[in-house]
Picture (cartoon, rainbow, N blue to C red):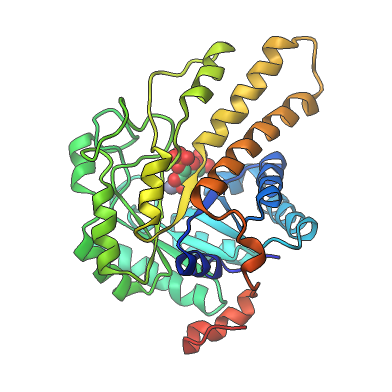
Length: 344
Ligand code: G3H
Ligand code: 13P
Ligand code: ZN
C-alpha cells in the first residue's frame, strides 16, 4: 500500500532504525527493491528524481508504482520525489500520486546555484502548506551538498563546500520557519561515485555535525544524501569487464549506522545500485557475447541491485519492520497535520 513517508520515518524514529531511499528509473529497479523488501520484510521508500520522471514519463512511473503496491500489498511503500527544484515540480509530483516530496530550496531552481536562507524558507514553506493539506510528507534541505575534498563531488570547490555544511543553529531555525517533516543535511557527502579519494575521516565526512543537529532538533527526521558506500568489489567487477572507474571511496555503512543512532532516518542510495547493475550487465556481455535477449542482462542487473538493497535494508535496521507498521493513507494524514493527532 502507498503510504505517506512520514509514518515510515516516525516508526523508524520510535524504534531506532533507518530507511534506505533507493532511486528508480525503470521497472527492473522497482522490482529489485520490492523483491529485496519482501525477502527482508522491509518498509519501502522509492524515490524518483526530476531526471527519472523525464526519462520514464510520469505515467509509466505512476503505473509501475501502482503495480508495486498491488503486487506487494503486505508492504508499506512511500513514493518520494527526490530533489524537487521548485514548488511547481513538487505540486506536479503530488498530482501524480507521490506520497512525499523533497523541496530542495538549498539550491536555486537551476539545481546548481546555492540559494539564500530566505529563498529556501519561502519555497519550502509554500510546499509544506500545499503538501500537508493533502497529507503528503515534505523533506527540506539546509546547507548544500558537495564533497569537501577538492575535485570530489560535483559543483562546489572543496573550500566552498566546507562553507556550505549545515549550520546546526540555522537548521533549528529552518525547521521552525518551515514545518518540514524531514531535513536533509550537508555533512561532506556528495552525489555520485567520486566522493572521497581515500577512506573518509571525520575531517571530510563530518558525522559529528549530525549529532549536534540532532541535539537541537530531536523531533525532526534527518536525511543523509549522497550515502552510497561505493563498495570496492562493485568497482572491481566493472573494471574486470572493461569499465573505467577511478580510485574512489564512499560513505562506510558503519558511519551511516552511527548516524542512525543520532536521528538519521532516511538514507539516499542510488550510485551503489547503478554500480551493481552496470557490473552485472558488463559481465553478461563479456562472458556470453552471443547473448542478445535484454532479459538475460537486465535480469542479472536486477538480481545484482536486489542484493545491494537487501544488504542496506538489513544494515540500516528496516528489515523485519514492515509487519509492525499500521498503514495510513495520505487522506488520513490530513487530520494529523491539522490537529497533531496521529491517525489509526
Ligand atoms: O540526486 C541524485 C540521484 O542520484 C538522482 O540522480 O538526477 O541523475 O536521476 P539523477
Ligand atoms: P548517491 O549518489 O551517493 O547514491 O546519492 C544519491 C542521492 O543522494 C539521491 O538524492
Ligand atoms: Zn540527493
